[in-house]
Structure formats: structure tokens, C-alpha cells
Image (cartoon, rainbow, N blue to C red; front, side, top):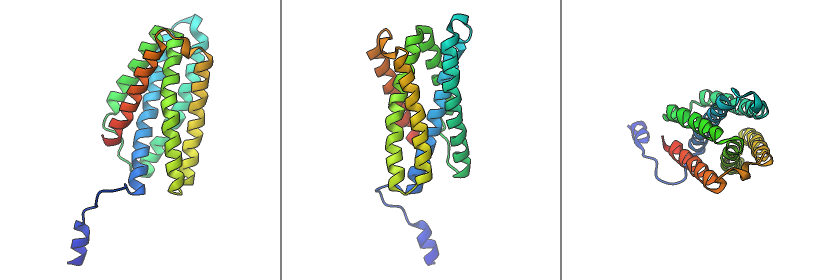
Length: 191
């Protein structure tokens, strides 16, 4: 009888269990890396068809490969830790690819502005997670996230060097993309 009562206990509100917090991080980051791969694919779909845009197409291919590496790692973590992926994967697929195509059609600087905006949000997001993971003594996961954060910062820095902040309407474009990233994180946290 006592065993039955213990199973019926309802967890009281408060701080999430570490395994719940880690599962949420993995779900959010998996979705984010999936979206990032799609953004770069959308941008490459435009630039790869234009011989005079070979330089940016090559940069995008390199950044997409980094994001695919991150996504592969999160695919493995999803399986290993039995984490439920977001139900919104198909939406992030279309949204990411669409954002990539749209910013590429606006030009190279707009494509770089997209990278700069996304990676700025992700840099902070990974930073918070690394701190939280270290507080939980999840050092291996914290190191992995820190490595990914460093690669995202490198993407952001390249985008800035390539003129991201000179894109037409940069403040508006960057603000909208950053708001979209924050919204995607908040939604994916729950769904």
C-alpha cells in the first residue's frame, strides 16, 4: 500500500529537477541547431546558383557543416538521454529555410546580418546553459556546449567582418530575427 502512495505523489512546484532541465536544454538546442542548418541551406540555395557568389556560398557551406556537426551531437543526446524532441520540427524546418532564402535574396550583407543576429542570441543562450550545467556538475555537457558556443561566436564574428551591420535596414532586420529566435526558444521550451 505504501508503495502505491509513493507513486501517486505529485511533485510540488519549484525548481525543475536537473534531469528535466537538461532534457529541456537538449530539446531547445536540438531544435535550434536544426533551424540553423536550414537557414544556411536556404541561403546556399540562393547563392550557390550564382557563380559570382562563390565566396559567400563557400562560407555558408562551412558554417552549415559546423551546425550539422552540432545537430548530429544533439541527435545522439536525444537518443542517449531519451529526450522528447520538439513537436515543432517541421515548422522550424520551413521557417529556417524561408529565413535563409529571404535574407539571401536581400543580398550578402543581409544574409550576414541574419547570421550575426541568430548567433548573438545563441551565444548568450549557450552561455547561460554552460553556467547552469557547471552548477549541476555536468562538466562534460558544459564543455560540449562551450565548444559549440565558441563556434557560434566565430560565425557571428565572420558575419560582422563581412559587413552584417551594413545591411540595409540592419537595426530592424536584426531586431526581428533576434525576437524570432527568442520566441522560438520560449516556444520550444514547452512544445
